[in-house]
View 1 (cartoon, protein in one colour):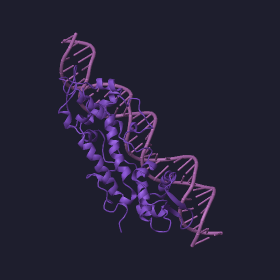
View 2 (cartoon, rainbow over the protein chains, first blue to last red):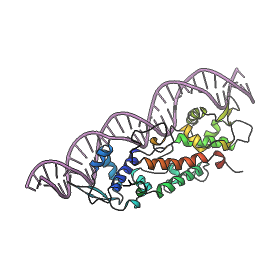
View 3 (tube, chains in turn blue, cyan, purple, orange):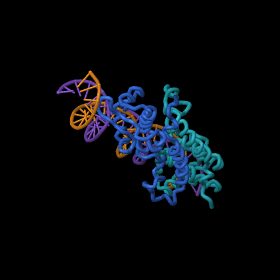
View 4 (tube, rainbow over the protein chains, first blue to last red):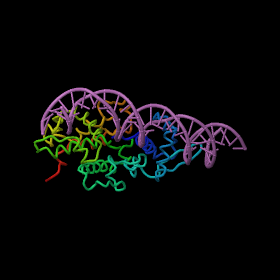
Amino acid sequence: MKITTRGRYAIVIMLSLANHYTEDKFLSLKEIAESEKISLKYLEKIMMDLKKEDFFLSARGQEGGYKLAHSPSSYTIGNILKAAEKELAPVSCVTEEASCEKKGICKTYPIWKDLNEEMMKFLNSKTLADYIERK
Amino acid sequence: MKITTRGRYAIVIMLSLANHYTEDKFLSLKEIAESEKISLKYLEKIMMDLKKEDFFLSARGQEGGYKLAHSPSSYTIGNILKAAEKELAPVSCVTEEASCEKKGICKTYPIWKDLNEEMMKFLNSKTLADYIERK
DNA sequence: TTGAATTCCTACCAAATAAGTAGTAAAATA
DNA sequence: TATTTTACTACTTATTTGGTAGGAATTCAA
């Protein structure tokens, strides 16, 4: 039951941007890649998924990069992970979309439902602001 | 962040045994495989891992099978999953064993640590008895 | 105005993991 | 003693993960 590097790096990116939120300039992926020692190309790819959400403003060219569109407190950890990973639930039957035909009779379903609720309670309550660097 | 079929089927096995706990006979994997529509061979393999723990008594031959060694309330969901899956933590850096050299400086570490704590709180508190079939 | 820097986009690839099969030996009992 | 069941080892196949490669479009600084 692992969060993949996609999810983890997505949080790295978002938290880096959050840490620079008050500055009035763009932060490039190259800077993040270098400071975090992650492949730039891989970060670019992860960024493709994040960009589908209304997460940030971007600028090409020199002095270009990314900037959070909203304040750090408006991004939950769950929102970010969900954008990066395909699905967040520990077992796919607990999400509305992927309904399993055995849902009504499956004896283990209540376990996954309870676990998912606990996880979501956490992931949807914590935001980037909770994990930002305090100066 | 998915629980694999290994982990899910392990819970299926253990919950089936728990539901037959009061009966004075062994339950065979074949019966579980048929009633749950899971490959017998695959269940056997998962059983190999569970058997390393002191989970049950077994008997070969006709009328053979498995039986819980202890009462359902003494098996936590976490214990079972941990025996079936390699590791339970959502990110491996949060377990004592696999310590990451960046742990002290990693800005995302606190997120995974908090998430892991929430998950473990749930997984270690719930037992088979909580999900047993009520007659 | 041009060249470097950056985002943006598509395709491909290798390694690891997950999920399951196959076959057989050993034991127990009906 | 034939059947049933656990016990064990080896193999296989599909999917997912974690990238790489290459380049086009855009922008700005020098």
